[in-house]
Amino acid sequence: MSNLPLTFCENRATKRYTTLDPIYIETLRSTMNGVTVAVERSIASEMPKIFGLILDGWTHLSEHYIAVFACYEVNGQVKTPLLCMAPLMNEPDDDLSAVAHREFLANMLSRDFGKQLDQCVFLVGDNCSVNKRLATLIGVPLIGCASHRLNRAVQHELQEHKADLAEVQALMIKLRTLTQSAKLRLKTDLRPVIRQDTRWSSTFMMLHRYFELLEHLDTTDDEIADLLPSASCNRRLRAFLKELMDVESVSKALQGTNVNLLDVREWFDGLIGIKPQYADYLGTAHIPDFGSGCVRVLRGNTTRLTRSEKTALRAFEVTTDERLANDDAEGSFVECMEKRRCLARHEQRYVLLRSVPPTSNMVERFFSIARTTFGYERNGLQPITLEQILFLRQNAGYWDASTVDRARQ
Image (cartoon, rainbow, N blue to C red; front, side, top):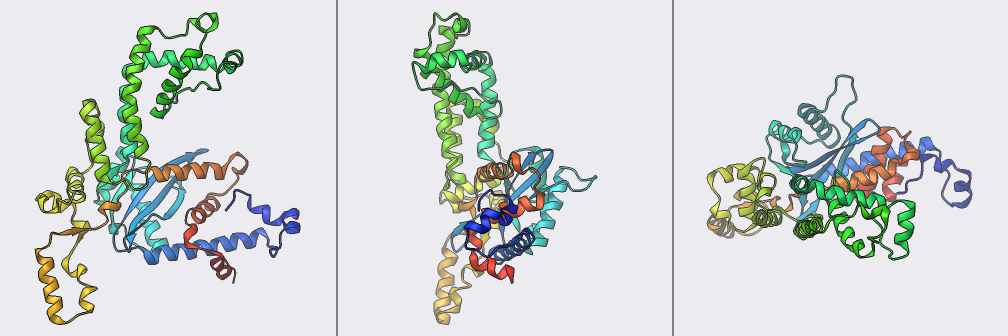
């Protein structure tokens, strides 16, 4: 799907240079509605009894949207379809509280997918107070986004180097002016980089670029001479940059697709070992027993689970009857009894834990697509139209040309 406006189908050039049957925008909207319903039914049919939800919010032009992804396993394969991307506030008395989020999720799941909110066994989202309260209301653990927690830890540490970083920022801003940029272009292809307040990685990139540009800067230039950091400041910043390299490697690793809760716990424990001050942000969990229990299971130490950890993981537990449901359909009575005896000696098994995403980065990436789709030239899009476009694009694997044909009939 492209970012063309829906009126593209009525464009004269479109009708002239395509071999497709001409349609009108009303037909296109109707077909999109039909395909959306078909995709919702397809997702609902494959969603198992238990699943998780990954959610985050995005504000654009005074409208607050919430995007919700499901997370579940089908034949051992992880599925993360988009369930909805819609405004949370539609009535004058609506708010952004945890109760409003809970009502929104409950209504959406039952209306569009025939599921109940109590079938959700975990939430993944920013480690904020609203999400913590939401998880408590639903009665499930909150997996606070690891990237968000790491960002908060580093942002707190950046305050200790606030003065030194401000000097580099002022220099970088000066180097972006027309005069200084022209001088710098004669010596190197590297461009100045400035930091952003919301992303600590921009600070890392700024420091890295500063030391790359340092050898190309003219210390005799009166326009920048007063802005150049001192030698002692450079020594402090070099040491700080070296420390940030370890953090940056973890931050990049968190962007991977096969990262699980055990990976994050080991990486964070390593960072806490060299930066104990990070423990306040990286060592906490919404339900500590759930976090420690997941780590034990993923390490293969299921038999060492404590009673409280078993209680926290009860929703993920696979009973013996469920494990034998398929096996009992085949084989003799004696063979089935032998299998039951073997499983009785085997350790308890838990499902879905290895597939629980430790971050909500996929929602962040989705919002980047939403921002591009909306664009400055398409601000007139209705929220329902924007949701349908993004829903069909994100869930492209659930529909094809035959789905469109059936929707048009």
